[in-house]
Image 1 (cartoon, helix red, strand yellow):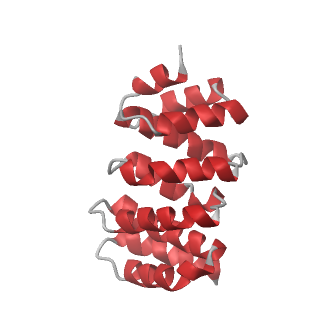
Image 2: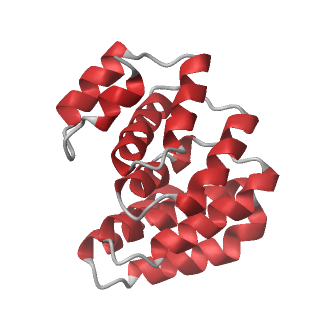
Image 3: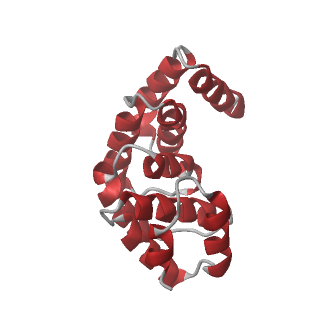
Length: 169
């Protein structure tokens, strides 16, 4: 059974199934390219599973090449609202973004910040701050976004923002 087929049959937020897929599909160079292809898929369920796996690979120390990060950046503005976007916001701390891809990531984090989804609003400042740490030209906007997050009506957004501030202290 292909990775795409398995991901297309994951029900909702079934992390048990995703963990099993992760165990059966350890990361390697070719797998990362296949995974990026699945992130580009039109089917939301496949995108969500692929971004979840990508985040897990990155958490385990896998590093995307600059070309792979550029490829990922090309998909950011077409990802639907929801889990796939969240997974990529959560993966921001593991991405080394090439200069030419930084504007796309900045635009992506701005769009996530404007979302009614509190999870996206909570994680968008994290991604933007990490982008600004690599590319200081974004620091003023990132700090303004963080300041807004500290005053957000949602407690989860404020809590995530406070964690960011504490990390930088």
